[in-house]
Length: 359
Ligand code: NAD
Image (tube, rainbow, N blue to C red; front, side):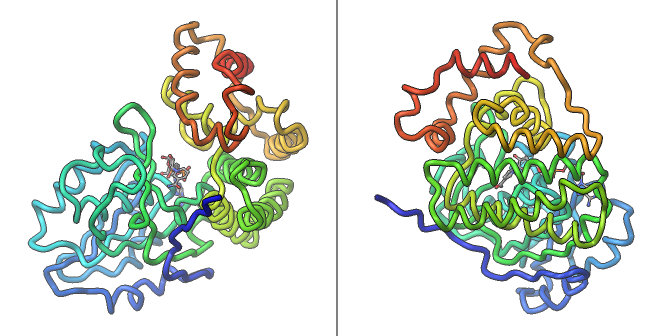
């Protein structure tokens, strides 16, 4: 038996309004006046003074706004890294990511690429990063993926969706301020919370799970069930969602994703769907595997007036569905987590195609 030995975030602040502590958190980290603090922030905050007025800028510090209309690619990481190398006289004192899972993954990968030669694509995989990264801080403004606590940066590159997995990827500092997620649009809020719920369900049920991952998954599910079964938007819900994401991310660190994520990656590749909604579409079709949890999820959608896109497969050709299935089956670790080491005897390409035809 080989037990996973996973890296953890070194420092965490949790609390409403804790984002305002950014100046005192950053101040001891400044290397010198030529080594800036670079804030990589979701473009949705450009011109939003509630957030940007509290970002302390001095010397050569800058906010770099990034669009997350498309999921992050290795190409985008190389572009941002090159821009930083060309425009600043020294390496940054710290990279600070402010946004949802997409921006957090960009910040993680850029901090790695600033100290490692070559392009981001060559680091997709496990344990390929050699040099310690720039100090990096994650500040989630959307909770659900668990990216704030994970040891990976999920990027599109190579043959599709993949990850840089490294102990160096984990954030050095995370600031969890539930106030920052208060203006997330309702639909996005639901899909992110549901994504987190689904990740916890899979992590708990997985063959890689153990008492530690199960305890985090259950803690996450308890909070998420509370908030997804009530149609109110309160401060306590924001807190519970932020904690749910944290626990579910911790759970996945010790366990893994499963059938839902593997199928979702096929959908994202062919249909260009966004991460959280794609997971919801897939989970909705998994009643044979998680009967009670899928029923619970359907009730949650009713409470929140969520209409998921239906009959996606009817607009797809057989060859497109086959392509999705082939992409999906390549995520062998997820299938192993779902069905065990002998998963190939329990699940085939045809089973995957049948499931896609239900979506
Ligand atoms: P996202 O970061 O792509 O954001 C979704 C939408 O919400 C965007 O339009 C964004 O602008 C908006 N948004 C974010 N914060 C907001 C706020 N406070 N107010 C209003 N709008 C806001 O969504 P996500 O689901 O958090 O992240 C998805 C990405 O995370 C995918 O690329 C996925 O692969 C990745 N991911 C990473 C991990 C990991 O462990 N690293 C795990 C799961 C998923």
